[in-house]
Image (tube, rainbow, N blue to C red; front, side, top):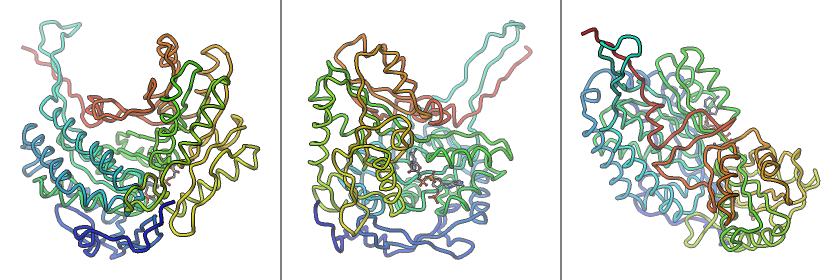
Length: 499
Ligand code: NDP
């Protein structure tokens, strides 16, 4: 492991940002929480407190919803054209790029993701999602309908913004999640009240400064840091919110649905996964091995689409496991701000305990640890990339989302494709999956048999702003990104004219 930085050297912009106040952003103004309360936020690479942040609760959510409603109904926002909104989104992307070094450092410090990864993946995808979705701002149209019973009438549909949205995001890719959520809001002309995760509020607050600089009118985007059971629950239940968009655990997803029932607000959910990586004996091993390793170890396994169940044909199983274990040992683990770090810590002490708990449970259920399994050091929340074999489908490590760098490897033999797919589909989740083979027939057949929202062939879960993303089964409701996201943020109005 690279030596953890005792006192990370911070750049001047990050030091300045951390030295300031971290208030809520409501109606274009920086304000303390109504209660005056704050909470501490940490560097998971050292476990040290790096800032105190306004702790919003129901009273602040009321203020933010009132601001979002006013901005939706009056003032400059509803009068802006799609073209003006799109230009604003491009300006925001440019500002993110201008401040990329600072944002990457701040994200690494608060979330634990290596700075280079934040820049190359999270910030790149944040900007590209803003630009791609901006393209739709000028293409939100209905269609002319030929009525089936009254052909002489003129009928058409309009697509109108759904209204005030509540958005609750997790800690695993904070700024990218914020941009993925804000992009369709801006493109469609909605307004939002966005709550970042309590572990990682900082880049969302910095993003709010950039939104203001990009010219987004007051009240359109409100950022309210706070805790799930207070601020988050108040968003989910608020009668003034028309739609809630949530990314996180299935457990909280269920709470959101219940709370949303009060005013029957629309709900979209991007939940977890336990995604299979299926390697056939004819696969290119030199492609499959690093691909399977990346599928689980990227972002310390804290990825909803992580390939956490590896199914390998018995003829190549040992070779694949040895290869992935070798890849795991090569990963340079260290403080996210240390140059050359490839894997940082888990996001929090709780997550470290949760992941360690799963590994211990797996071992006591009879799984074999091929590599990893232990915490690294005492400072920060580092854990070794881990591979478990000798698992069975009843074990919690195979059934449940661990959200850490823990891979369960399982053999299959010459069973037919239906049997292999049945095993891969034996999960309540359906977010992603991948098939590794050079046989086109196997590839096409398996793609159709896997019950998941995104399936890769010789690649695991490629994310792109143009590609719809979401889950089958208990992995969620609705599709974000691509053209599909417009369905989540607009209402269809049918118009009939008796001429
Ligand atoms: P949660 O689902 O608890 O958190 C996600 C977001 O929901 C956070 O902003 C959280 O706030 C908020 N929240 C929590 N409780 C409520 C509530 N009652 N009403 C409204 N909002 C609420 O995830 P955890 O952080 O607890 O992580 C636990 C597990 O969830 C992980 O180990 C992983 O398995 C899964 N997960 C999946 C993610 C995905 O991308 N699909 C992302 C994150 C986690 P607060 O920050 O205050 O907790």
